[in-house]
Image (cartoon, rainbow, N blue to C red; front, side, top):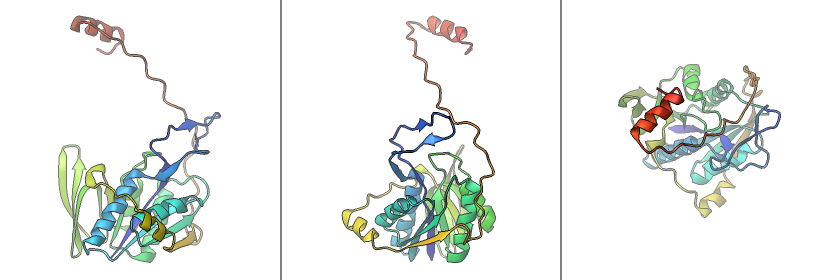
Amino acid sequence: MKILVAVKRVADFNVRIRVKPDGSAVDLANVKMAMNPFDEIAVEEALRLKEAGVAEEVIAVSAGDAGTVETIRAALAMGADRGIHIATDGRLEPLAIAKLLAAVARSEAPGLVILGKQAVDDDAGQTGQMLSALLDWPIATFASKVAVSEGSATIVREVDAGHQTIRLTLPAVITTDLRLNQPRYASVPNIMKAKRKPIAEMTAAELGVDTTPRLAVVKVAEPPPRRTGVRVTSAAELVTKLREADAL
């Protein structure tokens, strides 16, 4: 069985993001980029399934500009077998990404597609669900535990009320939550090996997908600065301050 893992290139979560002066977008010039943390978890889970003998091949796929290849190489350094780079320019919305992944999935015929539950740049959390609908495959979102047997997968999901256990018939889509695993670090030998692993290049046009944005970004603004806190000496004073702030 093949496992297809989607990885996204985002600004490193340790970097403080700035908005462009004209408010049109986030300024990513000279910003350190990295793999989306939830996608790192997805890669790790795919590798663990391969090491358990469930899968024979792990394929990392990503869409974006030339810099996206670095993110694919990072997945290969972790242990993925090969990569697929879909070269695109401009902003990609979740629906466009889902269509690109669906086209690759139809070509590769994986038993599982694993991706992060959301990306830390836009927090949309839509791509996995849209991909499931386009492929007409079952989906388990927010997975905190995955067990794969012959022709099916048992998933423990994190939900508002606790945990939910469901069983999916393969092929299926899984989106990963934080508590699923702890991603491994790429060793120096594996980083060197990753440079020799193949990455197939293709375009959205070759896959027959129109990536034109459907949404217009009206304005991007930084959140307002937090107000300084006030120290109180008694519960009565606290109640008074809350009433003054219309918080009661």
